[in-house]
Length: 43
Image 1: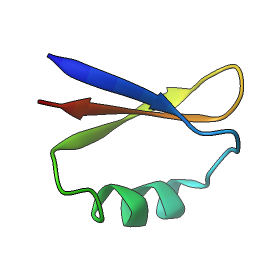
Image 2: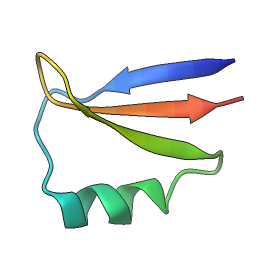
Image 3: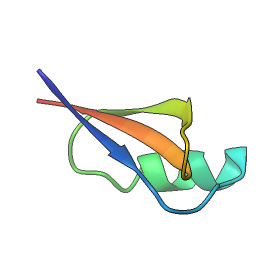
């Protein structure tokens, strides 16, 4: 089970790494979507 989140802005790779480390649940960078950077949160 997972939740997908797409931001409304595009982040650089180092910004993605810093942000992922802030999430309280396991998360992965899922690439670039139609509106911005995408993440997947695992439940």
